[in-house]
Length: 65
Image (cartoon, rainbow, N blue to C red; front, top):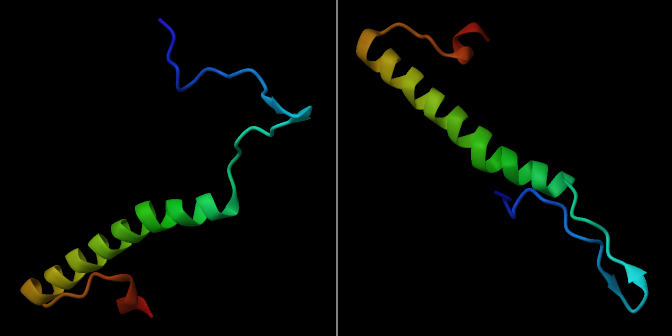
């Protein structure tokens, strides 16, 4: 069984020029951070604020600053 997403396609050419394969870029890394890291950090911050509101004990990173 072949999975079409993971196989390499043949190198295409347009008017004799080879088209480069897609590669990771800095912009892709920035979007990855926005979509993955930012929500995790925000969720952790909200949990820390909730713990502090309920127990009165500061458990966040900013408590040590």
